[in-house]
Length: 219
Image (cartoon, rainbow, N blue to C red):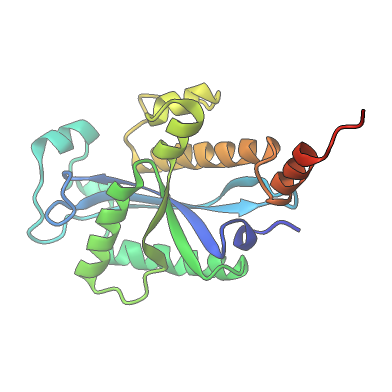
């Protein structure tokens, strides 16, 4: 029986994407947050599971970069966004993640993102700012789909990596945290599933290949 805990050494992968008011996690804010958990079937194949999505109010004193707002198309003060505080959004996400993490017998969540260091920096800054004591994510470890796609596909841009794998990608929908999280999750699952189907996991596949390669051929 294949399990997430066995596949990722006890870590529970959670795909994360953010839209922010700039590039600096110490002074810019999260404006939109989406997290998607994953699950694994009896054959060891990954698929997306539960999605959590929030529009976020800028924290007090946050800088709002006009170019970033123009790029994302987000008006932080539009009442129709029904935005909540970063503390409320993070606590709700973390609570739900912990429930699924426990169900999969994992001991820690690990962030999956496209250019994951960017999202990880903003999440850690928000956790610190809100003084959240029980952050389920590993403090610095992550899985970066930009790196994975670069190695396996020769593509580092999310849209191009998805199209290489025939994953539908709508450029008009991109740069929404919810849409990009869904597509990053699809990309991550597809890359890992193909890797498994090529014989890369579980490790017994390597051992079998090594044994076959070293066995003397019959004359």
